[in-house]
Image (cartoon, rainbow, N blue to C red):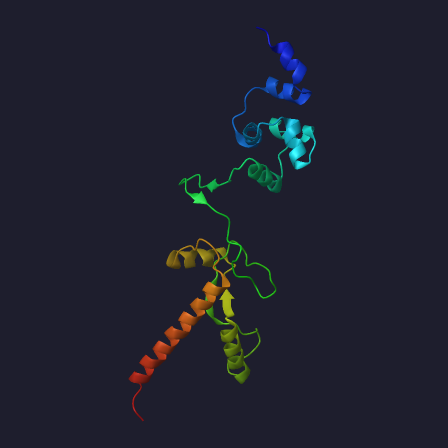
Length: 202
């Protein structure tokens, strides 16, 4: 039975062009088609759900253009799908960087490629360590749980540090870094106690 006439009658021009191109090897075009299949809708039906034209969906499916990441995420949610990213080398799932990672005082995020480390409590630059205000700032930052956070911008220094300390998976939260600063305080107090025991009696 010849169904060519039926296909021509009900298919849009864009869908006929897609049929002539042959099957795709997955990718974004195949994912959009998979979403349509799950939702059991036509290109026009999917377009109506996300407020775009049918020709836009057709271009996605033919690979002429691709949906923005936010639109693709919305499409996946419509189909009840949860996207995941995996390492091509190990196959392990890789998630996005955490949203509650520590931020700089101005509210900006720290550079994603750097590793954050704590050296104590935050003191504004320019305050000499010998002044009384320096220790006032230390006490204030300790009470506010506001640690001094540093990172290396030099790629060579970062590589050397990672050889010694390993490569952190993510940027810690401010709460975690504050706990690290408190741990440094405890270590320093412990060292002072050791030095006091070793000091000769007057």
